[in-house]
Every structure is written in structure tokens, then in C-alpha cells.
Image 1 (cartoon, helix red, strand yellow):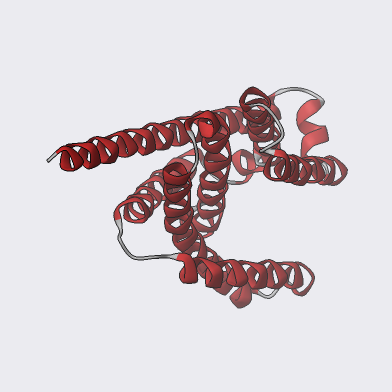
Image 2: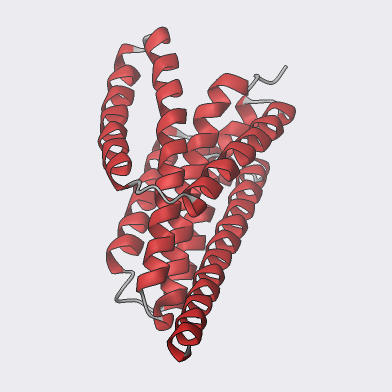
Length: 232
């Protein structure tokens, strides 16, 4: 009987720990999305800064900074403090917002909002599935990661080829891939929360939020191809 109560207590404690970590993950991701949206909306309104961010050279610089921040956070997450990781994550959200500023110039606000709501709904469904499913998504995740590499290669090729039908195929494939990655990343974060000690909760919440944030942003961009409409 004592063993039964002990096991029940340990299970409840683990569930509470995982729930706390996941709440922190979603909170940081949500705040980062707000920061990105606000930055993307404000940047074009600032004289000089908007022109610089939207120029080809400025966009390239921002893209390099983005890649550098993702690598720094992912590679150094275990060496840096939770506060440092969080600050770098929100810095990345600001830089990404600057690179996405062009969206508010190219698409109507109504279509952006509509696409955001569609993204939120589909993302929410897949992250709930990833959290509660008992199916191991490891093999699916590995396949999706390889598919993502192929998607990036095709996207680069199509930049020079500029083939319309291929662009639509890439967008559809991108939606499918990032929906799957959302479920996989959610399950992976949950499993990490179950295995890692409490002392690492802050860093785990940040790296988990970064993963889901990237899934959401990419899903939004691919869906925007289908639901976005240009400004009049």
C-alpha cells in the first residue's frame, strides 16, 4: 500500500512538473509572437529604419543575425543562464519581426489576421495532439526533418527558377511539414521535461519556446501564400 501511494505521489509530482514546464514554454512562445508582430508592424513606420530593414542588404544582414542567434541559443543553451537564453530568444523575436515587416506592406491587414487565426487553430490542434498522443513520433519527426531539408533546397532552386506551380507545391508541402513538426516538437519537449531536473526548467522552456515559435512562424508564412491577399 505504501508503494502504491509513493508511486501515485511521484506520478502526480512528475505531471505537475511537466505541466509547469509546458505552461512556461507556451507563455514564452506567445510573448515572443507578440514581440515579433509588434516589431513587424512598427518598423515600416520608422523613417530610415524601415527603408534599411526592407532593403536587400538590410534584409540579408537581419537574416544572418537570425541564423546566428538560433545557432547561439541551440548550441549554448546548456552553458548559458536561463536569463541569458531568454534575452537572446526575445532578441531573436525582435530581429525576426524586422525581417517580417514586409508582410504588412505586401498583404492586407484583414488577410494577415485571418491567416494568423487559421495558423493558431491548426497549430493548437497539432500541439495538443503531440502532447497527449501515446504514439511515438520519433520516426515521423526524423522523416519530417529530412523533408524540411528537401523543402529548403527546393525553395532555393525556385528563387532562381521562379516556377509558379512549384511554388504552390512547396507551400503545400511546407504546411504539412510544419504541422507535423509542431506535434513532434511538442512531444519532444514533454519528454525532455519528464527526464530533466527542475534546475533546467528555465532553459528548457526557452529552447522549447524557440522550437514551437519557429514552427508557428513558418506555418503562418506558408499559409499566407494560400490565404493572404495583397493590399489594394
